[in-house]
Amino acid sequence: MELGLELSDCAELVRITRNKVVESRHLGVAVVLDPSGQVAAVLGNPQARIFPRSALKPFQAIGSLRAGAQLSSQGTALACASHLGTFRHQRIAEQTLEAAGLGTTDLQCPSSWPGDSATRDAMNRQGLGPGRLAFNCSGKHAAFLNAAVHAGEPTGSYLSPDHPVQRAALAAMEEFCGPISFVGVDGCGAPAPQMSLLSLARGFGRLVSSTDPQAEQVVQSIRENPWAIRGEGSANTLVIERTGIIAKLGAEGVLAMGTPGGYSVALKMLDGSSRGTDLLALDLLASAGALGKEEHRQLRAALAPAASTPGARAAGLELAGRDFSGN
Image (cartoon, rainbow, N blue to C red; front, side, top):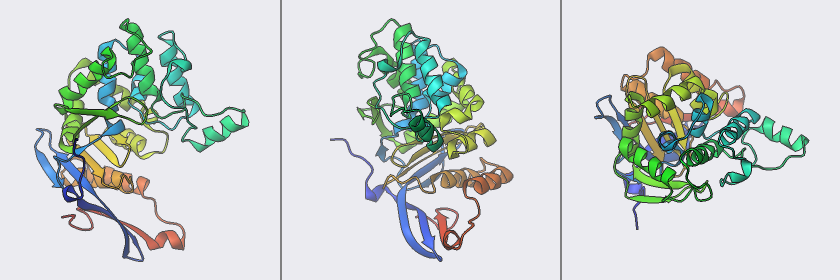
């Protein structure tokens, strides 16, 4: 049985306070790498093994492109996305399928309501129900299918680890992140590799520095279409828009970022919470000299706006390395 993240691997990363009294604590692991791939900062054990989940989508997209996928800039970005299911997101996934002569019924991801409330309300008014295009991984699945068709491979088994598209995705993940010894199943049905947090950080550092054509297409497409990665106003989208940093969340409290200068950060919360993760990742990058002071200040203001009610003003967020040592 493969080992996962243990309590002994973790450091305290985030504290939630009320009237300056600690109310909740979130433990986890975080690591920052410099452009040479050396550890610049670490909290907890970065060799701890995790499932990066959707944080691996940029590498899976590289695999799809190498397997033969023919994707637009928006389609490439959506292949890397954990999107909110707006009609715009859904349409790009549909176009990726149509370009391969396929349709929604070929998707094997679950059906869901959009994460975007306005789109969900609009679908209700139109008498529509949950759909596969609205599922947050639909862009990745559409890219897998597009690759299968253009490679002349079967589409019905596109999620099998033995399918040529999945083998290409695994090869890309190992190329950028390092060897993978265990592969589980993700919530969307796709293969879910396990690796160390250090490997994930290393992968993002290599991704943003790579001159590989498919990696460059992924990075450029994300920067051209930051809205596609999550949604307008979301943390990942704001970070990409304002800094060019490739930011990608993963389920269960995973987050990874790679800066234009080649720094990277990856973190994982033990309890799966995402509270404070974006601010913590940005703080760690800023402390390593990878994010300018003004960019950092503006992002913190956007991601943690001033509280407007007495109850909100009583609440506080404290981060390791900024407000306490985290050791």
